[in-house]
Image (cartoon, rainbow, N blue to C red; front, top):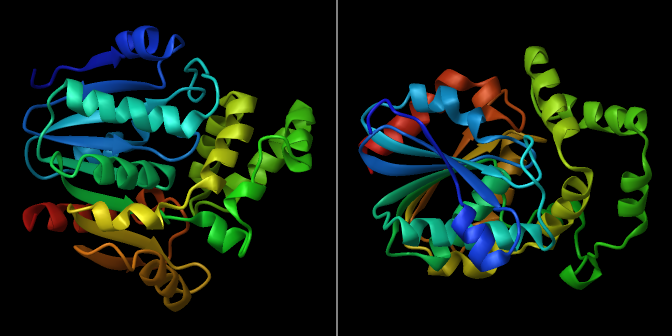
Length: 279
């Protein structure tokens, strides 16, 4: 299977388990120990292509993409939970063992959830600028019960015309990378997303509090964080939120916004490969 790329669309899962389109699609390449690459919100699995090319060693790479993004058919809500269930099914159905999961942002949330559910399958994690409960940082003190699909903000987002939504998406893209040449890439991924998936899927993420499952994880974990608003404040947030994760190391990446693999690619590859050597 070396050097051969196969796109695996999980029709069996979609048709038999959920009676709808699949929540994930998977592109597989290479031979060796399995690595699952989980992108962030709105991002396609192909965001990891350069990372795959810069890995030292032989790996079987599983690049995941999500329903509603990158032209994939949307699914019904709850969106995040269905994706998590299909990822777990995919690992079990394919009998994947000693798995490394590399997850960025929301992909890191999924990595944590899967590692907590399948501790015997997941050997290690690399979490890239991913926090277990972003609601705690963005909306301190707001309980999960107050985060609902039907909200004034969501209605406003769904009602935006294309120009209004593009302006909002552009501001978000500009805030996520220091690389001006990458802004339009991020913008186009947002604009390509199914609007309801974008709005309600983000609501799913605001509901998450994965701090309560961290104690179930046995995987060795590398957490790569960005320096916003400062390295000191950001590291304090990571240490606080990941307090119940036992086998971890936290490393902060300077001069980077949310997309470390864009802003500091060489340092990112260095950290990933160093972790793999000592895995």
